[in-house]
Length: 132
Image (cartoon, rainbow, N blue to C red; front, side, top):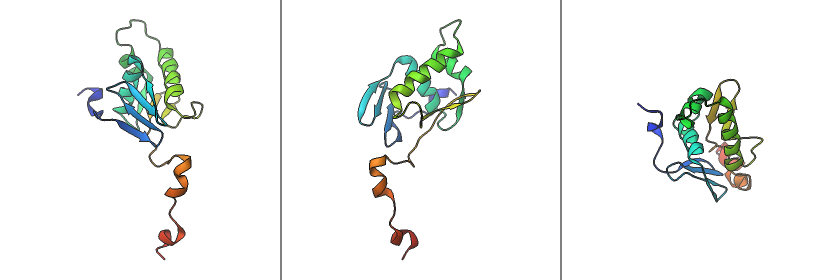
């Protein structure tokens, strides 16, 4: 069984602000379409196949640079940084592309965090919450 088998063919919705279409190598961030490089797509594909779980830097290195003899772990770091610039609302405080220090990276869905402008509609009124 290969790592990418679990990735859905349709778009992967990771939150109110982020949708990935890995087959078209696109991300939609706050309604804006962003193109992904083949390497960025391969890393996201490996992370999406293990959504919510940590994927080691070594695994990502093997997925992103399989053809490269002397691939260096810093390649992963640089590419993840570039990906955050593309897909995170605030790249310095990533919600979706999380670093697990000393291990690797994790792709996280944030469906429980509505976009700030919609947060008001999502809060149940006290009457509904208490049933009275």
